[in-house]
Image (cartoon, rainbow, N blue to C red; front, side, top):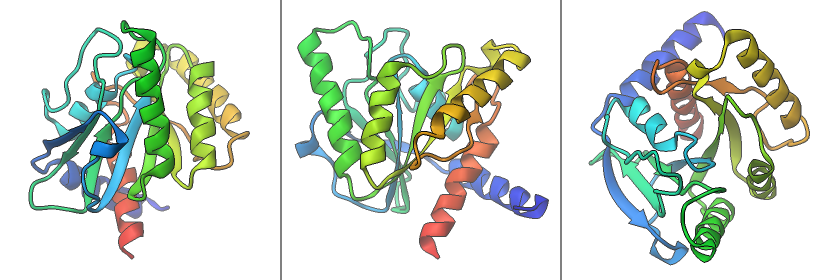
Amino acid sequence: MNDKTDERLIEAGRKLFARDWQFIWASPSIETLPPIAGLEIAFAGRSNVGKSSLINALTGRNALARTSHTPGRTQELIFFEVPGKNDLRLVDMPGYGYAKAPKSQVASWTELIHKFLLGRASLARVYVLIDARHGIKDVDLEVLKTLDRSAVSYQIVLTKADQVKAAELQARIAETEAALAKHPAAFPTVLATSSRSATGMAELRAAMAKLLEERAS
């Protein structure tokens, strides 16, 4: 990819996320999913990794996705799209791992996550969010295994990159990319982002714009 292509995709990504993104659907179970329309891109990650904050930063809408300091607040699959457009939907998934909720409820969310990742025909890509301060944990590896069994491409996105020193962040990126070598379905490169400083947002938008272009061609 050359500089002109990079610039073009970054502009395409900016336009894509400058649109009027809105909440359209919440699904507490596989049986209540919305009818398929266009491509879907999902954001998965541990509780409190910053999925909702990332979606808000991508779309420039501070309150589009509900954020909370309480892990496990998002308990459903939350869908967003632009009214009148059926090319792309964003899906905010329940956080997996630790949550202040009964174990049976956490197990239900976890089952919902894995079923959606394995069985949604319109799911074009999953971004697995990893806290840049902590790196990949065992609970993340379980989700990566599910994605390896599916036909869905996925990429690791490090969040909260602004809270890590530059040298430590580079080491975390290298460590994460080395771990991904064991997962052939994963993108080999890792994106580092910060919802607070907007680091990496243009690149992430451009990646989604590129996906749309590839699927349309």
